[in-house]
Image (tube, rainbow, N blue to C red; front, side, top):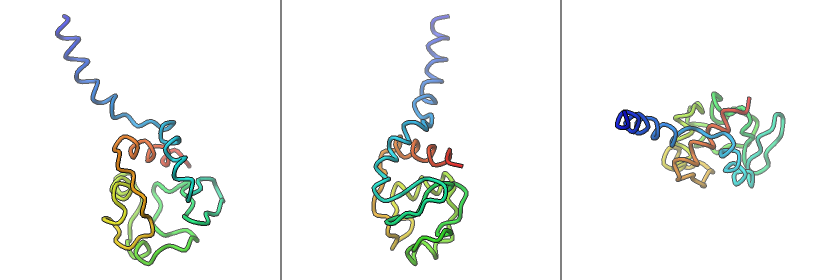
Length: 118
């Protein structure tokens, strides 16, 4: 019986370790607020408003986006955000976004936070 419980915990543990954490993502997003805002109707000065970004077409708000991002034809789903935030210049060479979120857990959490903003 003990072996069964240990085996069951071993299967559950990796899932729990990678669960998205909206509160932790909000804390990570605090660093992003140096440039971005995430409130309905707010206007970002240095970077676009990220409220409602998940599901939105890239460069589709009134912000002055780079020509590279305008030409990207991306839609900000979770997978695209993950790739972009990991290495913005790699996915969209010429984008003005130069900050990367290289930590997988932090990136996953900040995407969960962004997805919660609806």
